[in-house]
Amino acid sequence: MGKKVKNKDLAERLGVSSTLVSLVLNNKADQHGIRKDTQEKVLALARQMGYFDLARDSQETLPVDEKPGVIGMIVPSLHDQFVYEITPLLQKAFASIGVGFSVITKDPDDRRYNRLVGAFRKFYSGLILVGDAADDYTIRSLRSTGYPFVLLEKCVRMLRLNTVCTDMTEGAQRVADHIEKLGYKNVLLVSYKNTTYDGSDVVGLLRQALGKKTGLNKPVHVELNNHIISSDIDFSELEKFMRPPYSADVMVILHSDLVYRIMSFLRKKNLRVPQDIALISMEEGIGFDLMFTPVTSLKKPFTGMALKVANMIWSEVKNSGNSKYKRQVNITPELVIRNSCGTI
Image (tube, rainbow, N blue to C red; front, side, top):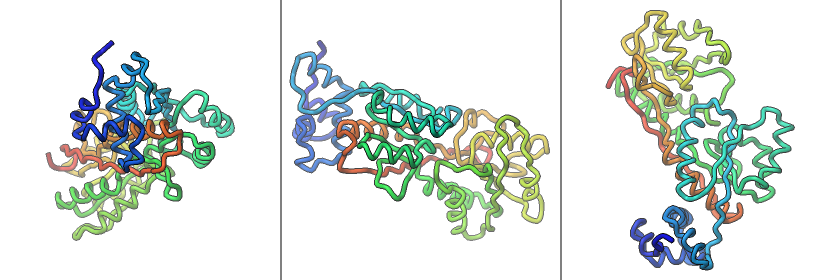
């Protein structure tokens, strides 16, 4: 048996009082008005340091109802940059508190998938719904049964739900500030046609942020057809705004996989980045720092999101999905500046 974890050990690590730790571990935190996020931090560290394991070994009675189990994460697709980046961080976060973790891809057959929603309770203690996997039917079904779940990169304004999202309003503002700082005038926004970006109108946010900048002309938005199988895209509409009379100075691309295609197109046209046109991506992509030219991009706060989601869903599981407080957390992304925007 390892060394027993004491309340003062947890208190010192967290920078709080031993009394607060004692109240949380003895299930009296709500009675004394201790904030939910503080309770989560205490319980998460207690699990990480083996407090519950040692208590079980010594056959002590645990005042706090501990429910480790397995957490499932439903994603729209495994071929998604966000899923690829966040999954290992969530695995690490859940492993540190002794919770199992599994990823499930949403079945494209709605009828078949809807039948599975009711069966999730048998296999998972709680669920994380990512992006478009958080459809209306799934949310209603889980809420009606009091099932513990958290939305990741999906905001439902009409309902009070636990959500963790990237603050794209602040992200768009950072991109607009940087474009203004560099002195560009004509901004070209590029995205795929008929697609959503993390459930939010990022084009609208960019238009709003850029519209407040003096000296910038009204940005132009070009939508390109997304040919998943073929790499061929009709860039004629894009090319039109790169020539006079508009002559775009900088291109802001919403989707990371579209960046590779546009960079290839520009090379074929003997157009240089950033000498002929600057480029900024609203998503970080694999190898952006190794490309020729390295791409400036908005990087999501993956580590912070993973930790927040892990603590939030565990709190929901502990309270059987009936937590008194539902929180909407928005975390600010980082603008990683590389050569493609015209500055280092």
